[in-house]
Image (tube, rainbow, N blue to C red):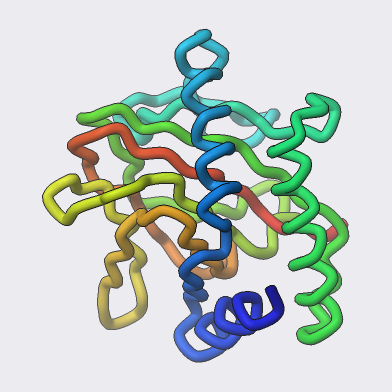
Amino acid sequence: MEKIFDCLIDSFIEDKVGIAENFLSVSLAAHLKDNLIGLFENKKLLNAGVGNDTVVNQNKLIRSDVIYWLDRKHNNQHENDFFDLIDEFVVYLNRTCYTGITGYEFHYTLYESGTFYKKHIDQFQNSGSRQYSMIMYLNSDWKKEDGGELRIYHVNEEQHISPNNGKSVFFKSSDLAHEVLLTNKQRMSITGWLKTG
């Protein structure tokens, strides 16, 4: 995995946005996708809010995805395999880049056809604990006409990233505004933040 971790870190250092194909193995991505679909079908996913616990604002004009928080307490084998992978990445990141990450939080994210998330920054105004944002995609056979690209706003340009299966995207939570463009089919991912403090 160190080669894939290096790819994610090196591209982040070069361009402020790390991208690594196959961060999730085909097998793990498939299991996580099955989990997410099962949770969705059983109506376990909740409307996502804007802000943290103290300033939650569910505004469908800003974002219209549904989410489900991952937790080792769920005792789900595939979620725990995912957490083991993230633990491995955090240890490697801290060792090679001295980032001081001490924790993280992740949730499943599902966008139905016709949904989106308008331009925003991931770090809360009243808390600076989120250091790095990470997204891992769970979408097989994604085509350009399916929409749902991640648009990242750099100083002089916009970057578009397709949500292809197994891909991971990694960037500073406080630095880059981004949005999820209107999706034309169901779009799935795991989204989260590496944290300090």
